Length: 323
Image (cartoon, rainbow, N blue to C red; front, side, top):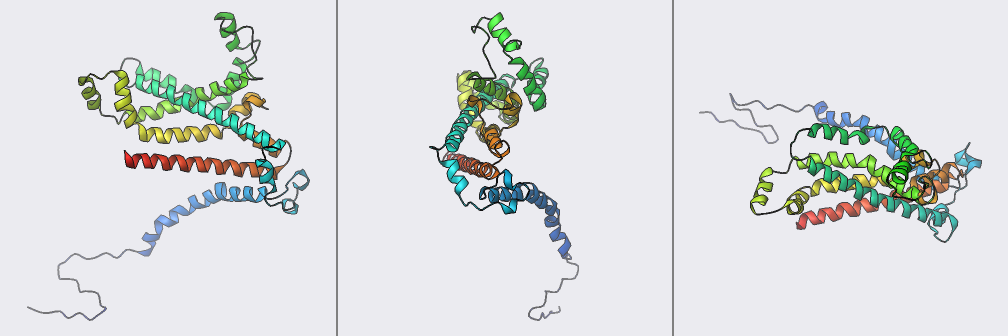
């Protein structure tokens, strides 16, 4: 029997025949951070730096006279923000009107897309002949390019030669005459219909994936207890889809509120009843050539969406804790 004396600060001697410890190489520890560098550079170049430049522009009186040299634009402080938030002035009044129109469109589109998506997902939950074909057909609006789909709807909404007036007025006699759909009050309905048509397949796809995780035993137990379709939907399907719905509704909200392409392709210059805030900010920047004011509106829109998102996520987290 032999004793081994270890000096203070020295590493313990390895026992004969024991496992050998491997020292981690410093390069291996740094490898994950090195791999993240390209993503961080891309995030800075695509999102962070343009956002900071936009905030800086919002503090300037940046008009068409300073496009060649932005640094020569006079500093205006919070003047652009005061102009945009003054609801008694013409700029703030128009911006508030555009915000309310956008909020109304968003609420209707999110609700409509979610209802249609849920109905289709529940309808196709059980296997039957032709289910795969219907699933494929339901995803066609989401797969079509935005420009192609909206241009097609634009032709369909034409007053004299469009299919919508032909069906509603000439065939079904549901409306009197041939109403305008791309002008006046009906432009709001046209915008809502097209957005629901474009987005409900995404809701259908997401909810279909969520329904795959619902155990069939719960439906069988509910059926034994005498639960009907509505009771199963309310007590089994919707509670188990709550995490999916939380993310889905937020995504649909952000997509619709920030949507620019649909209204721009459909109207080019939307009427007052379909004045989405994204196009309103675009007009403030590129039609009136007031980039400082347009940037201030963009920053305000970002702040509103950020607050709504944080409140929504915080409320959902509190409900999950108390559930």
